[in-house]
Length: 289
Image (cartoon, rainbow, N blue to C red; front, side, top):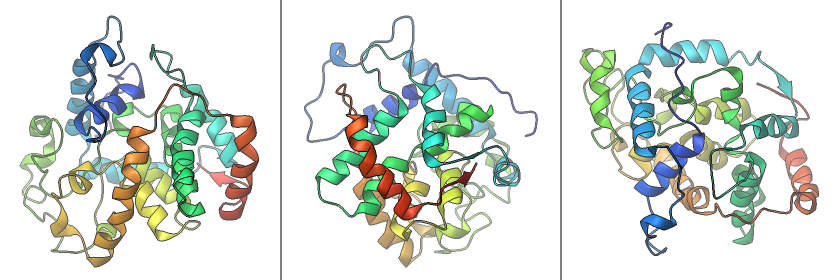
């Protein structure tokens, strides 16, 4: 897998994020007409998302994940405060979105402010503020198919409920007898901490923050893209009792992540002092990326 292509199939990370919104709509919100959805001129979003998942499903093997962990979990790319990391991440402003011109800080604030407005604990608010910071991987020349996208276990059979499951037929693990059975290299109810997930911003940020945040926050960060489980319940056979309990928080977080995007920009200058104190309460001054 060392020679996997660096091709970037998406014009923007937002292509994948909007695809998630369409696959998991909020039942409380009236369906939009086709004209109301964001319109990308000269861009076939369905095609770019399919190409994204073709690459993702073809190259996210057990060995690939191990290689990424060995490389990127050395945390030798950059040392930054959280605020520097967010400023760095803001270079990923979605220039291709014709309707919502929000940088990454504003998206994070929309998520966290919705959580705060509902009276949740401060660690949950902070989790909303942090959850996508792992996307800095894109700025370390990582291809998008190894940064975003729905996540899933590797080392065992791929669920046919995973979006664009058909592309797993191009994955070497699909026909590898070590990995293509229900449990693969794992054992029943072994616990997700013993299961390797497809590589991306979720696992990366979890590994950076695992010594600093409460356990429910870490589950949210690590598994918020694991739709095959928290929406489809396809991997309960690998989960233990703690996983089941913690996934209540993952499910509680999901609507805040998906449905808080709006064109109204948060007032960053007014909100920043609150978040500076919150970050200081839980995190060190400098983090290694």
